[in-house]
Amino acid sequence: MATSTLPERRAITRPWRSRLLLMGPAFVASIAYVDPGNVAANLTAGANFGYLLVWVLVVANAMAVLVQYQSAKLGLATGHSLPEILGKRLGTRRRRLYWAQAEIVAGATDMAEVIGGAVALNLLFGLPLLAGGFIIGLSSMLLLALQSHRSQKSFEYAIMMLLAVIAIGFVSGLFVNPPDAGHALTGLVPRFEGTDTVLLAASMLGATVMPHAIYLHSALARDRHGFSKDPAVRTRLIRATRVDVVGALMLAGVVNIAMLLLAASSLRGIEGTNTIAGAHAAVASALGPVIGVAFAIGLLASGLASTSVGCYAGATVMGGLLKVRVPLLTRRVITLIPALAILGAGIEPTLALVLSQVLLSFGIPFALIPLIRLTGRRDVMGIHTDSRPLKIAGWTSATLIVGLNCVLIVLTISGQS
Image 1 (cartoon, rainbow, N blue to C red):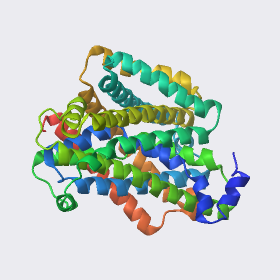
Image 2 (cartoon, rainbow, N blue to C red; image 1 turned 90 degrees about the horizontal axis):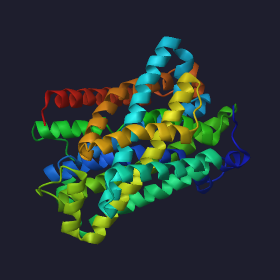
Image 3 (cartoon, rainbow, N blue to C red; image 1 turned 180 degrees about the vertical axis):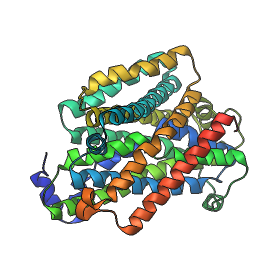
Image 4 (tube, helix red, strand yellow; image 1 turned 180 degrees about the horizontal axis):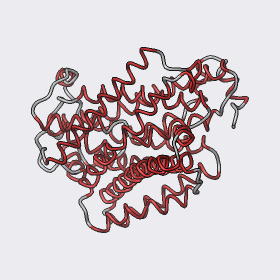
Protein backbone atom coordinates (compact mmCIF):
# COMPACT_ATOMS: atom_id res chain seq x y z
CA MET A 1 0.00 0.00 0.00
CA ALA A 2 1.29 3.42 -0.91
CA THR A 3 2.23 5.83 1.84
CA SER A 4 2.04 9.61 1.99
CA THR A 5 4.91 11.35 0.19
CA LEU A 6 7.38 13.53 2.09
CA PRO A 7 6.21 16.80 0.46
CA GLU A 8 2.66 15.99 1.44
CA ARG A 9 3.68 15.20 5.01
CA ARG A 10 5.37 18.60 5.18
CA ALA A 11 2.45 20.37 3.53
CA ILE A 12 -0.09 19.16 6.05
CA THR A 13 1.97 20.52 8.93
CA ARG A 14 2.37 23.98 7.37
CA PRO A 15 -0.05 26.89 6.97
CA TRP A 16 -3.08 26.64 4.74
CA ARG A 17 -1.18 28.01 1.72
CA SER A 18 0.94 24.89 1.65
CA ARG A 19 -2.16 22.74 1.93
CA LEU A 20 -3.23 24.04 -1.46
CA LEU A 21 -0.62 21.65 -2.85
CA LEU A 22 -2.80 18.79 -1.65
CA MET A 23 -5.82 19.93 -3.62
CA GLY A 24 -6.88 18.18 -6.82
CA PRO A 25 -8.83 14.92 -6.36
CA ALA A 26 -12.09 16.71 -5.48
CA PHE A 27 -11.82 18.86 -8.61
CA VAL A 28 -11.70 15.69 -10.71
CA ALA A 29 -14.76 14.29 -8.94
CA SER A 30 -16.57 17.63 -9.25
CA ILE A 31 -16.65 17.28 -13.04
CA ALA A 32 -19.60 14.92 -12.51
CA TYR A 33 -21.60 17.93 -11.31
CA VAL A 34 -21.08 20.03 -14.44
CA ASP A 35 -21.53 17.40 -17.14
CA PRO A 36 -23.81 17.74 -20.20
CA GLY A 37 -26.71 16.20 -18.27
CA ASN A 38 -26.50 19.01 -15.72
CA VAL A 39 -26.40 21.54 -18.54
CA ALA A 40 -29.64 20.19 -20.01
CA ALA A 41 -31.45 20.11 -16.65
CA ASN A 42 -30.34 23.56 -15.47
CA LEU A 43 -31.13 25.30 -18.74
CA THR A 44 -34.56 23.67 -18.85
CA ALA A 45 -35.31 24.77 -15.29
CA GLY A 46 -34.33 28.38 -15.93
CA ALA A 47 -35.97 28.69 -19.35
CA ASN A 48 -39.28 27.15 -18.26
CA PHE A 49 -39.62 28.29 -14.66
CA GLY A 50 -37.28 31.23 -14.21
CA TYR A 51 -35.67 31.44 -10.77
CA LEU A 52 -38.15 29.07 -9.10
CA LEU A 53 -35.75 26.15 -8.61
CA VAL A 54 -32.56 27.95 -7.55
CA TRP A 55 -33.04 26.44 -4.10
CA VAL A 56 -32.81 22.93 -5.55
CA LEU A 57 -29.27 23.57 -6.77
CA VAL A 58 -28.26 25.03 -3.40
CA VAL A 59 -29.54 21.95 -1.55
CA ALA A 60 -28.02 19.61 -4.13
CA ASN A 61 -24.63 21.23 -3.79
CA ALA A 62 -24.71 20.94 0.01
CA MET A 63 -25.46 17.23 -0.32
CA ALA A 64 -22.68 16.84 -2.89
CA VAL A 65 -20.13 18.34 -0.47
CA LEU A 66 -21.18 15.88 2.22
CA VAL A 67 -21.13 12.79 0.00
CA GLN A 68 -17.82 13.57 -1.70
CA TYR A 69 -16.16 14.35 1.62
CA GLN A 70 -17.27 10.99 3.00
CA SER A 71 -16.01 9.19 -0.09
CA ALA A 72 -12.59 10.84 0.09
CA LYS A 73 -12.41 10.23 3.84
CA LEU A 74 -13.11 6.53 3.32
CA GLY A 75 -10.15 6.21 0.96
CA LEU A 76 -7.77 8.11 3.25
CA ALA A 77 -8.83 6.39 6.48
CA THR A 78 -8.76 2.83 5.15
CA GLY A 79 -6.29 2.94 2.28
CA HIS A 80 -8.90 1.31 0.05
CA SER A 81 -11.45 2.57 -2.44
CA LEU A 82 -15.16 1.92 -1.97
CA PRO A 83 -15.20 -0.75 -4.75
CA GLU A 84 -12.21 -2.50 -3.15
CA ILE A 85 -13.86 -2.65 0.28
CA LEU A 86 -17.11 -3.96 -1.18
CA GLY A 87 -15.18 -6.46 -3.28
CA LYS A 88 -13.68 -7.95 -0.12
CA ARG A 89 -16.99 -8.07 1.76
CA LEU A 90 -19.26 -9.51 -0.92
CA GLY A 91 -19.40 -13.13 -2.01
CA THR A 92 -18.44 -14.05 -5.57
CA ARG A 93 -21.97 -14.01 -7.01
CA ARG A 94 -23.06 -10.84 -5.23
CA ARG A 95 -19.80 -9.14 -6.14
CA ARG A 96 -20.28 -9.89 -9.84
CA LEU A 97 -23.89 -8.70 -9.77
CA TYR A 98 -22.85 -5.55 -7.97
CA TRP A 99 -20.14 -4.96 -10.56
CA ALA A 100 -22.67 -5.43 -13.37
CA GLN A 101 -24.94 -2.64 -12.14
CA ALA A 102 -21.99 -0.37 -11.37
CA GLU A 103 -20.57 -1.01 -14.84
CA ILE A 104 -23.90 -0.17 -16.45
CA VAL A 105 -24.18 3.19 -14.68
CA ALA A 106 -20.52 4.01 -15.41
CA GLY A 107 -21.12 3.16 -19.07
CA ALA A 108 -24.27 5.29 -19.15
CA THR A 109 -22.29 8.20 -17.73
CA ASP A 110 -19.53 7.78 -20.26
CA MET A 111 -22.01 7.53 -23.12
CA ALA A 112 -23.80 10.73 -22.10
CA GLU A 113 -20.57 12.71 -21.92
CA VAL A 114 -19.44 11.63 -25.38
CA ILE A 115 -22.82 12.66 -26.76
CA GLY A 116 -22.60 16.04 -25.03
CA GLY A 117 -19.14 16.66 -26.48
CA ALA A 118 -20.32 15.65 -29.95
CA VAL A 119 -23.19 18.14 -29.70
CA ALA A 120 -20.71 20.87 -28.76
CA LEU A 121 -18.54 20.16 -31.81
CA ASN A 122 -21.66 20.23 -33.96
CA LEU A 123 -22.58 23.64 -32.56
CA LEU A 124 -19.07 25.05 -32.97
CA PHE A 125 -18.04 23.61 -36.33
CA GLY A 126 -21.10 21.96 -37.83
CA LEU A 127 -19.50 18.53 -37.58
CA PRO A 128 -21.81 15.51 -37.91
CA LEU A 129 -22.55 14.04 -34.50
CA LEU A 130 -20.89 10.71 -35.31
CA ALA A 131 -17.66 12.43 -36.38
CA GLY A 132 -17.81 14.58 -33.26
CA GLY A 133 -18.16 11.47 -31.12
CA PHE A 134 -14.99 9.99 -32.65
CA ILE A 135 -13.08 13.21 -31.99
CA ILE A 136 -14.24 13.37 -28.37
CA GLY A 137 -13.23 9.75 -27.90
CA LEU A 138 -9.76 10.33 -29.31
CA SER A 139 -9.30 13.54 -27.32
CA SER A 140 -10.27 11.80 -24.09
CA MET A 141 -7.65 9.13 -24.83
CA LEU A 142 -4.99 11.84 -24.90
CA LEU A 143 -6.27 13.19 -21.60
CA LEU A 144 -6.29 9.74 -20.01
CA ALA A 145 -2.75 9.18 -21.25
CA LEU A 146 -1.64 11.88 -18.81
CA GLN A 147 -2.83 9.69 -15.96
CA SER A 148 -1.55 6.45 -17.45
CA HIS A 149 1.93 7.53 -18.47
CA ARG A 150 2.80 10.57 -16.38
CA SER A 151 1.10 11.12 -13.04
CA GLN A 152 -2.25 11.64 -11.37
CA LYS A 153 -1.27 15.26 -10.69
CA SER A 154 -0.93 15.92 -14.44
CA PHE A 155 -4.38 14.47 -15.00
CA GLU A 156 -5.79 16.57 -12.16
CA TYR A 157 -4.25 19.77 -13.55
CA ALA A 158 -5.67 19.07 -16.99
CA ILE A 159 -9.14 18.46 -15.54
CA MET A 160 -8.89 21.63 -13.43
CA MET A 161 -8.04 23.65 -16.54
CA LEU A 162 -11.08 22.21 -18.31
CA LEU A 163 -13.19 23.03 -15.26
CA ALA A 164 -12.01 26.63 -15.52
CA VAL A 165 -13.03 26.68 -19.19
CA ILE A 166 -16.45 25.28 -18.25
CA ALA A 167 -16.89 27.97 -15.61
CA ILE A 168 -15.95 30.77 -18.02
CA GLY A 169 -18.16 29.35 -20.76
CA PHE A 170 -21.30 29.23 -18.66
CA VAL A 171 -20.73 32.25 -16.40
CA SER A 172 -19.74 34.74 -19.11
CA GLY A 173 -23.32 35.27 -20.26
CA LEU A 174 -24.28 36.64 -16.84
CA PHE A 175 -21.98 39.63 -17.36
CA VAL A 176 -23.75 40.52 -20.60
CA ASN A 177 -27.26 40.18 -19.19
CA PRO A 178 -27.10 40.05 -15.36
CA PRO A 179 -30.08 38.46 -13.61
CA ASP A 180 -32.38 40.51 -11.43
CA ALA A 181 -30.93 40.07 -7.92
CA GLY A 182 -34.28 40.46 -6.18
CA HIS A 183 -36.02 37.85 -8.30
CA ALA A 184 -33.04 35.51 -8.06
CA LEU A 185 -33.15 35.65 -4.25
CA THR A 186 -36.82 34.60 -4.30
CA GLY A 187 -35.60 31.35 -5.84
CA LEU A 188 -34.00 30.42 -2.52
CA VAL A 189 -37.47 29.82 -1.02
CA PRO A 190 -38.34 26.10 -1.40
CA ARG A 191 -41.56 25.68 -3.38
CA PHE A 192 -43.05 24.02 -6.45
CA GLU A 193 -45.56 25.04 -9.09
CA GLY A 194 -47.16 21.88 -10.37
CA THR A 195 -46.02 18.40 -11.37
CA ASP A 196 -43.58 19.66 -13.99
CA THR A 197 -41.48 21.44 -11.39
CA VAL A 198 -41.49 18.40 -9.09
CA LEU A 199 -40.21 16.23 -11.92
CA LEU A 200 -37.53 18.72 -12.86
CA ALA A 201 -36.44 19.22 -9.24
CA ALA A 202 -36.22 15.45 -8.81
CA SER A 203 -33.98 15.16 -11.86
CA MET A 204 -31.81 18.09 -10.74
CA LEU A 205 -31.41 17.00 -7.13
CA GLY A 206 -31.56 13.24 -7.48
CA ALA A 207 -29.20 12.99 -10.44
CA THR A 208 -26.69 15.39 -8.86
CA VAL A 209 -25.00 12.67 -6.80
CA MET A 210 -23.58 10.58 -9.61
CA PRO A 211 -22.72 6.98 -8.65
CA HIS A 212 -19.42 6.92 -10.53
CA ALA A 213 -18.18 10.01 -8.65
CA ILE A 214 -18.87 8.28 -5.32
CA TYR A 215 -16.84 5.22 -6.34
CA LEU A 216 -14.06 7.29 -7.88
CA HIS A 217 -13.33 9.88 -5.19
CA SER A 218 -12.32 7.29 -2.60
CA ALA A 219 -9.71 6.00 -5.06
CA LEU A 220 -8.57 9.45 -6.18
CA ALA A 221 -7.87 10.61 -2.62
CA ARG A 222 -6.11 7.38 -1.70
CA ASP A 223 -3.99 7.28 -4.87
CA ARG A 224 -2.98 10.94 -4.58
CA HIS A 225 -2.07 10.98 -0.87
CA GLY A 226 -1.38 7.33 -0.18
CA PHE A 227 -2.12 5.64 3.14
CA SER A 228 -0.33 6.59 6.33
CA LYS A 229 -0.28 4.39 9.42
CA ASP A 230 0.10 7.51 11.54
CA PRO A 231 -3.39 8.58 12.75
CA ALA A 232 -2.23 12.20 13.12
CA VAL A 233 -1.11 12.34 9.49
CA ARG A 234 -4.39 10.78 8.33
CA THR A 235 -6.34 13.33 10.38
CA ARG A 236 -4.49 16.25 8.81
CA LEU A 237 -4.91 14.81 5.33
CA ILE A 238 -8.64 14.44 5.91
CA ARG A 239 -8.85 18.05 7.08
CA ALA A 240 -6.98 19.20 3.97
CA THR A 241 -9.31 17.08 1.84
CA ARG A 242 -12.29 18.84 3.40
CA VAL A 243 -10.93 22.12 2.00
CA ASP A 244 -10.41 20.45 -1.38
CA VAL A 245 -14.00 19.17 -1.46
CA VAL A 246 -15.58 22.44 -0.37
CA GLY A 247 -13.55 24.45 -2.89
CA ALA A 248 -14.24 22.14 -5.81
CA LEU A 249 -17.94 21.68 -5.13
CA MET A 250 -18.48 25.39 -4.50
CA LEU A 251 -17.06 26.10 -7.95
CA ALA A 252 -19.27 23.40 -9.49
CA GLY A 253 -22.26 24.81 -7.64
CA VAL A 254 -21.56 28.33 -8.90
CA VAL A 255 -21.40 27.02 -12.48
CA ASN A 256 -24.69 25.14 -12.11
CA ILE A 257 -26.48 28.12 -10.60
CA ALA A 258 -25.01 30.35 -13.32
CA MET A 259 -26.53 28.08 -15.97
CA LEU A 260 -29.96 28.38 -14.40
CA LEU A 261 -29.67 32.15 -13.89
CA LEU A 262 -28.52 32.60 -17.49
CA ALA A 263 -31.52 30.67 -18.77
CA ALA A 264 -33.91 32.49 -16.42
CA SER A 265 -32.67 35.94 -17.43
CA SER A 266 -32.17 35.35 -21.17
CA LEU A 267 -34.19 32.33 -22.31
CA ARG A 268 -37.46 32.58 -20.37
CA GLY A 269 -40.42 31.78 -22.59
CA ILE A 270 -38.35 31.22 -25.76
CA GLU A 271 -39.42 28.23 -27.82
CA GLY A 272 -37.02 25.40 -28.57
CA THR A 273 -34.95 25.57 -25.40
CA ASN A 274 -35.92 22.00 -24.47
CA THR A 275 -32.81 20.80 -26.33
CA ILE A 276 -29.18 21.84 -25.88
CA ALA A 277 -28.95 22.91 -29.52
CA GLY A 278 -32.09 25.02 -29.13
CA ALA A 279 -30.77 26.59 -25.93
CA HIS A 280 -27.48 27.43 -27.64
CA ALA A 281 -29.31 29.09 -30.52
CA ALA A 282 -31.40 31.10 -28.07
CA VAL A 283 -28.32 32.16 -26.08
CA ALA A 284 -26.52 33.29 -29.25
CA SER A 285 -29.60 35.16 -30.42
CA ALA A 286 -30.26 36.87 -27.09
CA LEU A 287 -26.69 37.61 -25.98
CA GLY A 288 -24.68 37.62 -29.20
CA PRO A 289 -22.45 35.17 -31.08
CA VAL A 290 -19.47 35.61 -28.74
CA ILE A 291 -21.46 34.35 -25.75
CA GLY A 292 -22.91 31.61 -27.97
CA VAL A 293 -19.40 30.43 -28.79
CA ALA A 294 -18.36 30.61 -25.12
CA PHE A 295 -21.41 28.51 -24.23
CA ALA A 296 -20.50 25.87 -26.82
CA ILE A 297 -16.85 25.81 -25.71
CA GLY A 298 -18.00 25.31 -22.12
CA LEU A 299 -20.16 22.39 -23.25
CA LEU A 300 -17.23 20.92 -25.18
CA ALA A 301 -14.94 21.13 -22.15
CA SER A 302 -17.70 19.60 -20.03
CA GLY A 303 -18.10 16.62 -22.36
CA LEU A 304 -14.36 16.03 -22.76
CA ALA A 305 -13.55 16.25 -19.05
CA SER A 306 -16.59 14.23 -17.99
CA THR A 307 -16.02 11.35 -20.37
CA SER A 308 -12.38 11.05 -19.27
CA VAL A 309 -13.40 10.99 -15.60
CA GLY A 310 -16.22 8.53 -16.34
CA CYS A 311 -13.80 6.13 -18.02
CA TYR A 312 -11.42 6.46 -15.06
CA ALA A 313 -14.30 5.67 -12.69
CA GLY A 314 -15.26 2.56 -14.65
CA ALA A 315 -11.71 1.25 -14.41
CA THR A 316 -11.75 1.88 -10.65
CA VAL A 317 -14.98 -0.08 -10.27
CA MET A 318 -13.75 -3.02 -12.33
CA GLY A 319 -10.39 -3.15 -10.57
CA GLY A 320 -11.93 -3.04 -7.10
CA LEU A 321 -14.77 -5.52 -7.61
CA LEU A 322 -13.34 -7.99 -10.14
CA LYS A 323 -9.61 -7.53 -9.48
CA VAL A 324 -9.25 -7.03 -13.24
CA ARG A 325 -7.03 -4.23 -14.48
CA VAL A 326 -7.88 -3.09 -17.99
CA PRO A 327 -5.67 -0.29 -19.38
CA LEU A 328 -7.56 2.98 -19.44
CA LEU A 329 -6.98 3.49 -23.15
CA THR A 330 -8.30 0.01 -23.95
CA ARG A 331 -11.35 0.66 -21.84
CA ARG A 332 -11.84 4.01 -23.59
CA VAL A 333 -12.05 2.24 -26.96
CA ILE A 334 -14.57 -0.32 -25.67
CA THR A 335 -16.85 2.16 -23.90
CA LEU A 336 -16.86 4.48 -26.90
CA ILE A 337 -18.82 1.98 -29.01
CA PRO A 338 -22.31 2.44 -27.40
CA ALA A 339 -22.11 6.24 -27.68
CA LEU A 340 -21.09 6.08 -31.33
CA ALA A 341 -23.89 3.60 -32.01
CA ILE A 342 -26.48 6.01 -30.56
CA LEU A 343 -25.05 8.95 -32.48
CA GLY A 344 -24.96 6.91 -35.66
CA ALA A 345 -28.57 5.79 -35.18
CA GLY A 346 -29.75 9.39 -35.25
CA ILE A 347 -31.35 9.40 -31.79
CA GLU A 348 -32.02 12.96 -30.55
CA PRO A 349 -28.97 13.78 -28.35
CA THR A 350 -30.83 15.64 -25.61
CA LEU A 351 -33.30 12.75 -25.26
CA ALA A 352 -30.40 10.33 -24.95
CA LEU A 353 -28.91 12.51 -22.21
CA VAL A 354 -32.19 12.59 -20.28
CA LEU A 355 -32.65 8.82 -20.50
CA SER A 356 -29.07 8.25 -19.34
CA GLN A 357 -29.77 10.35 -16.24
CA VAL A 358 -32.80 8.20 -15.43
CA LEU A 359 -30.65 5.08 -15.78
CA LEU A 360 -28.05 6.57 -13.46
CA SER A 361 -30.77 7.10 -10.87
CA PHE A 362 -31.08 3.36 -10.41
CA GLY A 363 -27.43 3.10 -9.42
CA ILE A 364 -27.33 5.81 -6.78
CA PRO A 365 -28.59 3.72 -3.81
CA PHE A 366 -26.01 0.99 -4.55
CA ALA A 367 -23.17 3.49 -4.14
CA LEU A 368 -24.55 5.95 -1.59
CA ILE A 369 -25.98 3.59 1.05
CA PRO A 370 -22.84 1.40 1.37
CA LEU A 371 -20.70 4.54 1.60
CA ILE A 372 -22.68 5.98 4.52
CA ARG A 373 -22.80 2.62 6.28
CA LEU A 374 -19.04 2.12 5.98
CA THR A 375 -18.03 5.62 7.08
CA GLY A 376 -20.28 5.20 10.13
CA ARG A 377 -18.58 1.97 11.29
CA ARG A 378 -15.75 2.19 13.80
CA ASP A 379 -14.34 -1.21 12.76
CA VAL A 380 -13.81 0.23 9.28
CA MET A 381 -12.90 3.87 9.95
CA GLY A 382 -11.35 3.71 13.42
CA ILE A 383 -11.01 7.20 14.94
CA HIS A 384 -12.27 8.71 11.68
CA THR A 385 -15.77 7.31 12.07
CA ASP A 386 -18.54 9.78 11.20
CA SER A 387 -19.81 11.79 14.14
CA ARG A 388 -23.46 11.54 15.08
CA PRO A 389 -24.42 14.83 13.34
CA LEU A 390 -22.58 13.68 10.21
CA LYS A 391 -24.38 10.33 10.31
CA ILE A 392 -27.74 12.06 10.62
CA ALA A 393 -26.90 14.41 7.76
CA GLY A 394 -25.67 11.52 5.63
CA TRP A 395 -28.74 9.34 6.10
CA THR A 396 -31.06 12.31 5.65
CA SER A 397 -29.36 13.16 2.37
CA ALA A 398 -29.45 9.53 1.24
CA THR A 399 -33.15 9.21 2.05
CA LEU A 400 -33.99 12.41 0.19
CA ILE A 401 -31.85 11.60 -2.84
CA VAL A 402 -33.09 8.03 -3.18
CA GLY A 403 -36.69 9.13 -2.61
CA LEU A 404 -36.49 11.85 -5.24
CA ASN A 405 -34.89 9.45 -7.69
CA CYS A 406 -37.80 7.07 -7.15
CA VAL A 407 -40.14 9.98 -7.92
CA LEU A 408 -38.13 10.74 -11.05
CA ILE A 409 -38.25 7.15 -12.23
CA VAL A 410 -41.98 6.73 -11.54
CA LEU A 411 -42.92 10.00 -13.25
CA THR A 412 -40.72 9.21 -16.22
CA ILE A 413 -42.13 5.70 -16.67
CA SER A 414 -45.71 6.95 -16.27
CA GLY A 415 -45.10 9.53 -18.97
CA GLN A 416 -45.81 12.60 -16.85
CA SER A 417 -43.85 15.73 -17.65
